[in-house]
Length: 317
Image (cartoon, rainbow, N blue to C red):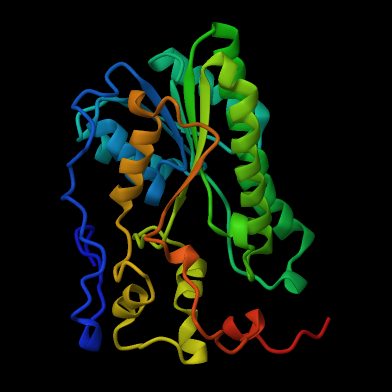
């Protein structure tokens, strides 16, 4: 599947149109140059959805600072994003380290100036039944996803408060912040905390001109998805719920939109939320998933334990 292809249902569902496909890559609802002179810092910006979000800011004139723990991914992303016409600086960073977080902001300011937009995209995640989860596994996900997001946001806020300048923060969340996430207890708890941070800091920092919003992606397949997450999405094979011959169609037909999302659709939402046209939107979490998280069946399906969905045997302690 290329970036321009969003698998749809077929067969007897062919008469159902689903939600229309988005405009082509490079399109934007915002005026050209919307982010001219604006520095945008994106964590986890070297791969996947973070890179897709960074690309849309770059197309609108932003100077980019992309941060990640892996330098090789940053180098590849820098070349790709620079080809869109903007300036790009990279920073290796473990967002769990407050001192290193401060250094990343120093790097950004030395290169282009204080970031006016922060996109907290970096997170950690992998599927595991709660009873099998080690304390280290819990800490690895919660410390990165929740504490790291807080440390980045705190540094951004402190610098803008000291300078007396406005700013915009976008925290990438997950729909199981509302619903809970069986198989992802650590990530769901962390993302619920991130959603609470959005709502709390929007009130605390609104008087100073700093807006905070959340952004939740739906199923948006991309080449950088981890094997664990890709395996969890394909896990229906173990309980007879997917068509192994056509997994792309299966994912599409399970969405109310009858298609999956494309990464640039998340980027478009991000550039709007941080733009001058969304200044009165703050403390809100926008879900970009074609209504999938709100879907309910008329009849509840049989319960299949998380262990069975992951192909694990009985818990033995």
